[in-house]
Amino acid sequence: KRDLNPPLKAIREGATGFGFVNLPTDRDVFVRAVELSQRYQGTDQPNFDLLLLQLAAKAGLPSKPLPKNSRILINYRGPAKTFPVIPFHQVINGEVLPEVFAGKIVLVGATTPILHDVFPTPFATQGELPGVEIHANVLETLLKGNALIRLPRWVWLLVAAAAGMLAVALTTPTRPLLAAAILA
Image 1 (cartoon, rainbow, N blue to C red):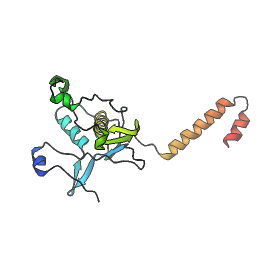
Image 2: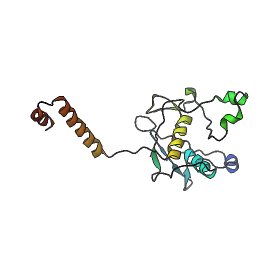
Image 3: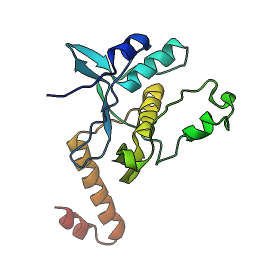
């Protein structure tokens, strides 16, 4: 059973919406996918990224149709700081002009490892990608409609066999019978 901790009722009632920020990990603790909704009090609640996508669409931001599955594979743009990162203290101190944020989706979140909100991902294998940047990648994946797909196992086996045959054919051009025997 999951223990979901939504915002306090007073905050939920005053907010445009709320979504879960939980990042599911694979067996190796890497974050490769995300659930777009979770059950809460008997209903499906959108995760944070899906809620932002819905709000952005209402505001007129173009986006692609939602994937059919609730679980999507994240199409990471790259490692940490691939998206612009502005320290919060610079915003509070007035060092950053408000125009910098105009027309943009702005995510606010912790980036320090001390708060334990950093994870290993395909581009951050040592666990150095902050959760807020993972959410930026999920949101971009949803906006562009370019979630990754997991190919069936037979496709991988076919590709591996074809690569093996090609390697043997290229390395033994003068001995095709020997190459065929090696593959058999």
